[in-house]
Length: 635
Image (cartoon, rainbow, N blue to C red; front, side, top):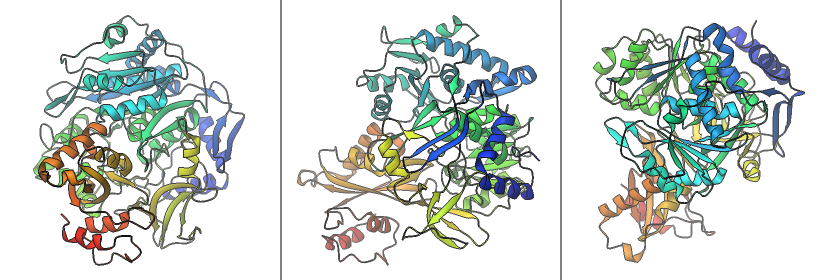
């Protein structure tokens, strides 16, 4: 029996029991048998959730790119590693073999070295979904630089915040990006950000849109000529298993984004193991995750997990609606995609369109469907199952987080019986716990509480960059000796888990975690705004959308409200990005507050969701009369 690739339900339960009874032996066997190490570890696991401190495969030496590229070259060098599908369907797809990927990563790594980038330096990557995005991650990893990818939909302010927080030395960007029929001036956004980023010494620019851009002498250089002059051989930097591999920022409930730090050895083992099992990947499969590499899904399940398994991974530059709503399915037919992993938001958007967009394509190659980013609602699940999977391709509804590094709870396709809206069972090595209102662990089935994890797994984030106290307070202070996920969940009569949503001030919009605090901070900068509160409400396409309650200063009360709404959304776009714009904006005389001045978001959520029958006790509010006004004026 191989622990690495589970093939039936009996084997799952055997492997799961082993992983819980002796986690160190379980992960040691997987790490030994399936990966290349330059030196074996001195200790499999060293952990203390009180500090918190977690170390996996301590003392081991490796380079993740030897596992993702070099070890495949002898037997599978000609196999396609990255299959790039451009935004414009008339532009031919690119098939980048493992041999070619090796050469391109080595050349890029040598360019980085020529710019003075060395082990431990931080490199910010702000690129569209083109091959250079994946290649730049791997080039950083090859020389031991720490990559920090920023989603190329974030504003210059958000980009600058992330560059400055991790003190990046170099930025990789492009002249622009294509998004459907539009092109976006990425270089202009970078230029604006770098006005306030003194640590940046160099900017490498990929030519993609061929648009006119400004190049700052002494700082900016086109990447292609540098690559052409670079050697195709680059020895790897030998890393400790606990050396940082990357920083990835995620929204917090305070204004400052959290730079989650993932280290090398444990992250590699866990992302590879979960990829192999959750997607039941076979060697001749073509796997496609539609996420952007700017998110953790892209890191773990477009780049590192698939490549560590020698897979063929699809990168798609475009959007599901361009040139029409059949684009996803056209790509599935064209490349005979076996596994398809996308967000519930995309499924809901496509389900609203004419079914002909789906039925005219041959989707018979699909073996596994997946969802990520938020729990999938039942209606979307059935549409996906019936029309895309033809009721024969199991749906893996995966639950995990930026902080976890890899999938934590998910069906195994063809092994675990699926249930709409349920993430089902924990993966091997994951020990979930549901915690009640009094801090007690809820045993047995048919219970609901806050979702925690009792034992570390190899890909858990080790810290928040530069702020270990915040890491401890956010994830380990709520419950003793447990990682608190920030999510609520229920466990049904057979032990299946269903995620019920965030329990803090983070709202998932179209699969993106958006902290309410930074959005409110942006809104409050408008000269007419006194204060604001943001909550989520159900949305047919996005899952959740943003509802803003905004109190105006006296000077703003006579302003045209439609113009105000446009101006406020423009400020949000500039500070955070268009993904954070408000769908609804209600101007209010005041906000419901406790006597200590805390805004009662629970009430605002219920009003936004039109659940006004049971608001609970509002008599303790400082201003209970404002609630009736808000209800009467709700949008």
